[in-house]
Figure 1 (cartoon, rainbow, N blue to C red):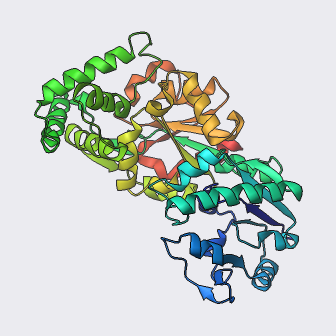
Figure 2 (cartoon, rainbow, N blue to C red; figure 1 turned 90 degrees about the vertical axis):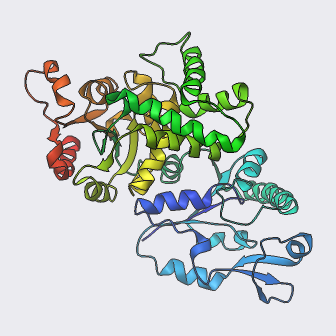
Figure 3 (tube, rainbow, N blue to C red; figure 1 turned 180 degrees about the vertical axis):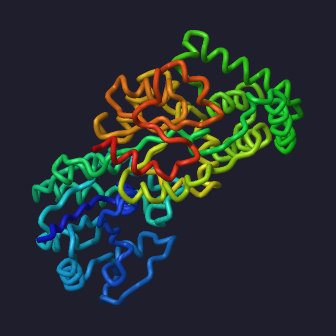
Length: 419
């Protein structure tokens, strides 16, 4: 008989994002706000009302957001598989008896407030000062009531897979496939292949600063950037650690140029530099269809030596961002792939043990040998552009490998790896 699991929590606890992440992995985890006919705002006379985005004290004190118990009961009876329902309502504690198990997503008021006010949040609840305070008060109230009812608390600051693992009795959902990006999935011409491209990138970047009232040459900006980057490495090994382009560039703006920009504005500027300094960027043949196929069975994550500030945009532009559940970039974790610390962070972000993961990449040393030290199995992608660097590292070609031109065979190799 299918299990009926309810996961509740206040606005801002992550219900919507967790539900979306699990659904991408084909887990039956609906967001109650998306179930037509279940949730309705009512006034004092039990008349259905549309929630106004600028709802203030008068509206919130005189209206309730409720679930239709009869609808919910019928909806659950119709489920053919286990269901993990994410949501909250004014009468949620009156319907918990319909579920086999109920969990509460718990986090601090500070984190709730930060999430409620985040610019990426689509739900209007919590946008005004009164809505925010009202939501925080209600969060405290429902948490106390949940505790009295003996509802199990879950740390809402974990990633979706860790949360699901806890809900599902500690069992992992899926194996994780980590992917290197450049020269494995993405065919790109980098500035290291043409040093002139980098200064061209900084020149284009510098021209955009005119709108902020700052006239500076690309070479001058590059010098400021290079000095701060070198300062970062003054007591760190360049063979192990990796700088963050966004953070260092932001320091140049604030400390050297006295220009304060938002994170979004900085990323937009950095991408101007990136596009001007690189050459072509395309997916290798077969990559899109292979990722699409793999994402239906496995959890996919990037594991790339790169700068996340521009790579994330490139994945989106190439229309493959949505295939990935996690994004591990050396700039963000602070370690190069030569270090096992990079892969330790990758395992932590994905919430997995090494035995449940496979790393795939074209750089045999850092994509195969290093993760294997931690017990992560690996598949080498033999790219004609990079493979000659590694031929001296083995007598015969590795057991688990594919030629780049046969990328569509990757699922077969992964099956063999996991046995």
